[in-house]
Length: 120
Image (cartoon, rainbow, N blue to C red; front, side, top):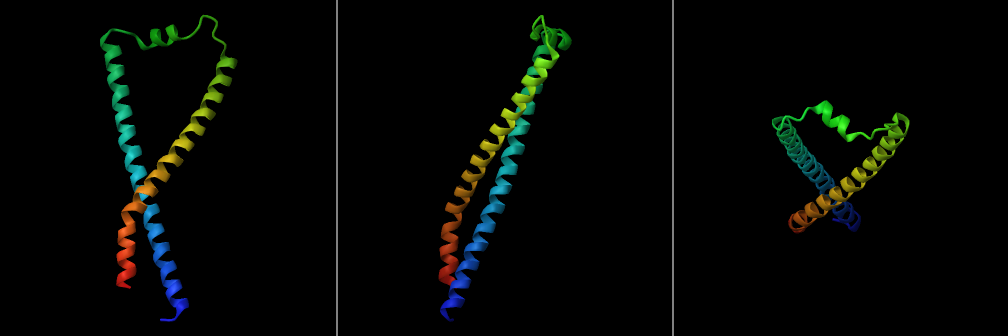
């Protein structure tokens, strides 16, 4: 093989490895999100049942959590700000988790790439 063919082949192997890493990271992220959401949902249901068993009415609980002078406009603005903050945090956390998954997959795939290069 000439040097250019060798270089193209190496680049192809690296690209293939990178694509596989992204796919593994995506599957891992999906699995973690699914497992975590099931856990959080179960925790919410458990807490709701506990409140219900204590005889606490949902409407009374909501009324009790609101201040006497409830201002819809201010609350809507606060909710909007909180939603933007939640989105920003979720995005940052998901990027961090994705990068961790890619790193793990890279560490796992490195020996396989070396073996593939030696075999080629």
